[in-house]
Amino acid sequence: MDVNILPSITTTNHEISKIQIRELEQNSSIQEIGLFITGLNSNKERLHFLQFIKDKLPNISIPFSHVRIDSAPEELEFLTNNFGTKLFNIHGNHSDEFENSNIFKYRDRMLAENSHTLNKSQMKNFAGCCIDLSHYYEDLKNNKDWVEDLEFVAGLFPIKANHISAVRKGNIWYAEHINNYKSDMDYLKEIDKKYFGEYMCLELENTILKQLEIINYIKSIL
Image 1 (cartoon, rainbow, N blue to C red):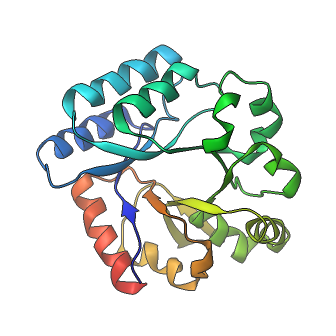
Image 2: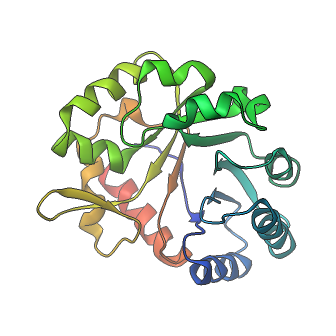
Image 3: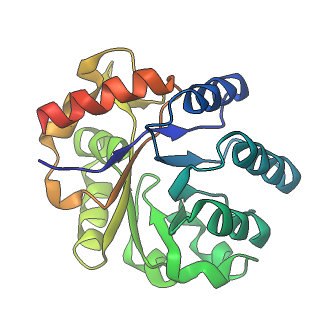
């Protein structure tokens, strides 16, 4: 199956972020990435980081980015103007806050992510869904009630993007933002492809080199 899976820069671990950017500097063949800017807690930090990416990777495209409910319009404007960002997402459970936020004017490009549940009432302010496939799979195994809500919403609204993290089994199935084994991605074989969006972004604190290996593996099993 032909799928568009993007490596990503994450911001939970700042040292990893720097390594990911350095790798991208050294690999000009990568033209598109996803961005998870949610690990930076202030508008000043996020704008500084975006400028840092622009300085280091002037030709990179970021079509899709996970932003925060407290993001400022300047952040989304910077992403749009400098990286050609088309779509953003926040968690769907922030729907009411989003309606009263400074970034509500981006609602026609804002997607709601399942965290873990996502219901119809939360979708009133969004342009579509970003299904986190790892959380969806966790709930398929651990919480069927949440799955019913999400699948109902997914049948009504367009699915435009996905997050992909590692999933493994302990006492229960659980998602991780570090991929250790190829089998951490095998869960994707069990998910109906109708839940796949145009942009599928790895949400992993792995190096870009490792992410490229993971992408090749995912493509080989789908």
